[in-house]
Length: 357
Image 1 (cartoon, helix red, strand yellow):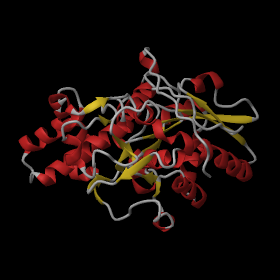
Image 2 (cartoon, rainbow, N blue to C red; image 1 turned 90 degrees about the vertical axis):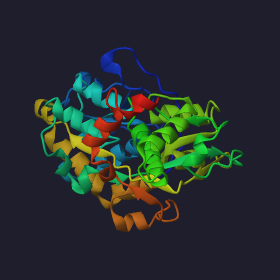
Image 3 (cartoon, helix red, strand yellow; image 1 turned 30 degrees about the vertical axis):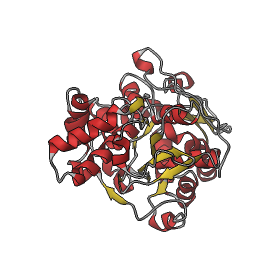
């Protein structure tokens, strides 16, 4: 289910509750879904108009195309199963910004964010109950991705691995880990490469990653904004990107870009959760539960693969072996002690990212 997309630049609103980096949806949504740059749209729509139940999915940047398509097939499925029509209001932005927006009042029924820690922050605010990570299969990650490089056709700078990104004269595009979940995955993948290169010598690792970030030309608030900077605005020699974003660019601009898979990357696990306090208030728990459960259906897993996410269903994933490099050496968040430890070590104020950037 491949559709034509038009890249849109991320726009960040000034108000704290609108920290969502709000791009317009890149694909037209059918009657079963609507797109919003601000999750507060659900508060205006309410949970039901009597005939149609409305729920809001607050998601992160690169999932726009996938959820535009998924919302349609879910609405069809739910109507067949229950006789009830459902509309999904969609919100996208940098994952960290999206999490903060929910904490500050965005009326999300479900969140589908770039990493578990962003959902943990919502849990700590009291909106999500403990144990959400085990509520759905595969650590509540119905699909995965990894981090790759996107370079311009011809790859004039000869970029093949992480060390090439530290060389003088190489302009790097990557989003900001303070607002983007994808950027956190990018940083950790680079760190792990340096860790293996320097056998755990932290001074050398920091120097390596610092040299890489010294080459960062533009640091957008979200992954889609970074893609826009590289693809539409023509800035930079290399984009550190979600695999699905890079593959989408190859599809959309044939012959203009090349995908480079580094020798070491990371298993990126976007997480999903029900926002318990909101669904109880909106009386939407049943449909929210079904919405996230159906992500694991064969139809949705196939759709995820077609939108360049790696299905969690291994059998369906194998069908996309021509699309994904399934042999790449992937570290995991467990190599960093889990997300809580990784966030404390690298991304909270005053931690390693602040030290080196």
